[in-house]
Length: 633
Figure (spheres, helix red, strand yellow):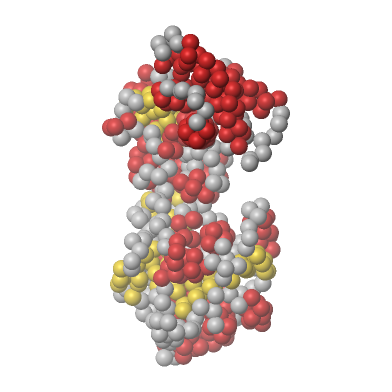
């Protein structure tokens, strides 16, 4: 028997149901005999009343009917009432049949009694809830700012329900393109028409605010809704992203202002969850560069698949501290290990792999800022991005790690800068270390994933524009025609994991980055989203920076792609290398630590044939060694 705490409210609820059961039993007789009960049935009614109500009361208590709170009565409470009354009715029928008491109870009474009891017990609970909510929220319902919700799906329904209790907002209308919803009401709020009617409806209802409640809709549809609201001069808000809603990190009522990420938003990634679970569940996983934008998101995504141990490696103590604080708050079952070291430290890396024996390594540690690596840091870029990759990759191969996933970049394609060239070399290092491994054989499989810019990552253009707009401008753009590919950080991390799962060794996976975004248009969108017009914030064009391209590419001129089972992943057929080539490359980098940077760039073009360096010609003539003297094969 379920124990129900005894308190005054529970006692009064019990008394209410005893009274309801008594009234229902008498009312059933009254209805059966058209409010004129014959004397012989009056006697049977009164004789059976005591034991019928007692039996019903015992069933109600046994099935935990008094654990609920009337103020929060819901469909689940109604189901529990229905089950309790049905059970009590079945016991009454069984008792009459087995005990042969001689009491004659009309069959219609047996049918009417439970129906009346459900109405009384369920109705009183919902009536009490309605009364309490009117007491608590009735006044506030008329006080909030009027707002129109775009969408009438599950997210919109949940939002309208939550906002009925909000003193800040009063939902006065809904708009949705689903024709079956037109004219219908959700929690008393009418669906006035399609989204394109926003202008007329907002004027008629005197509304200045709009909430976009279509988190699962195609991002183009959300963008069109946002742009329409902006054109009408309405302040636009949105519900959280669908991933955050599903994960439970936020509720639908946590509305926020529309950000540029919503305009550039991309559709949710379809993951092979069973395959990723097999790859990660109860395994040891290492992420290098774990404190960075991609590395930290990889950690967030990996812990969803319940690894036994997650090793978070980064050279930055502060970045690891921030990640530790975030993950610690989630109370994960995964053992988390935070390691501060340089991936070029052979001894430390080897000891780490020997101690924890990871089965999968995601290598996200790299220098990535193009202009900074172009001047005064050329050798450091080569050392960190190439030697660092080789050190960790070679150690993984020696330790028998099953999968090594390198995070690469679209800047490695026909590079015009040192950073891109260094990442192309890192790709070739991994390919050079790849042995021919049979499908089910042991050995390290090196997988490379190449993608473009991620929204909001450290050093990206979006945080920079946001800061410039907040200061009143100007917004600085390098060139009017410059374009870039963008994807969200969670999407990038998820696709990296998916590629890591699919990789068989030596492939370069290219992510579907969608359509390139014009940076000037992006800046104008961000200015509008800040509540200003593009002519109120000055845009300055400052010229391309060293090593910067007008257009990024995901494939080189001599590369082709092959499809994969995943719609957002393709495999690039790129020029490969071998172990001998890798050995010569490392020797060249190690011997060039003190070389002039322009000479380094010239020689780098020999190793990366598609690299087009930006150098000062006079500096090359100062060195006797010419590029053709380098022996690569």
